[in-house]
Length: 24
Image (cartoon, rainbow, N blue to C red; front, side, top):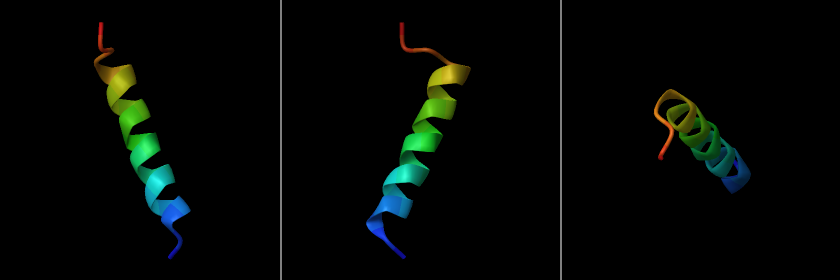
């Protein structure tokens, strides 16, 4: 597996969390 896969997975998870509870 490439590290891009890991980085993309974390980035997507963070984006979901941000949408669920935006860091005001």
